[in-house]
Image (cartoon, rainbow, N blue to C red):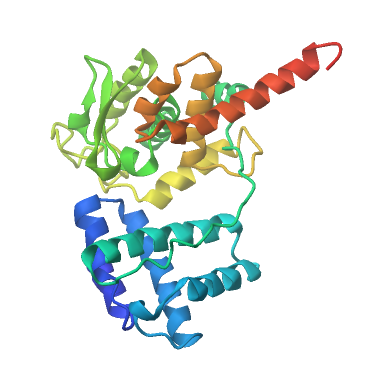
Length: 309
């Protein structure tokens, strides 16, 4: 909560706090999203006040917003993708302000987002994931078993970093072989797990630090050797460390393993709607991006196999 109070205090005369409060407590978006929206709005406010000498929302029209967008695009530090995200922030903000009656018109109605080439989600090849788990890369210690479990959970379930980090012992049902995940907007979903992951979870609990209560059902699963909850950066470093050993793709992060899970599931015949439910996507459109990876694989196979390709 304190981090958002600091953000409010940094805002100038354009007050974005009602919108941020709406995101936090009504939309219940993730803290990461709230921070991103806050940064975008602060940048927008700074430009309006310092470059255009505009200090009130009611004085902002589509021409002023276009000027800001052009400035962002001319700055080599902002890609079209980044600018589109900032435009989405403004769309959501002005819709909220119009509905709340703080503005009488929406200056975003005539704004068109710049086009950009869509990048396919990067993923690790199946043979590289097999190498990751087949090789003796993990020590037979608390940290070694924990690190392997982190990678196995990411790959076997497709969960997000924040979802994995917040898993508690009570979320794991070894008898039913399921994991309960609290996703975006506090939506719960149940994900099935296989015997390999179930056995690894059982082994990991036997390695749990002796100075914490392993029988406490509400205790976090992923902790340090002294029982402290793992930081997101620590999980990120663990994932990158082991992916560095098996792949040379540019991005080696927890989210890439999420992409890998979805792509491999689709390539092996899984139903798109089932993948959507496991990933916790609210819309099928978000899941359909992985069909492009499958199509690229089909094209590659076609070119290799067909004599006239």
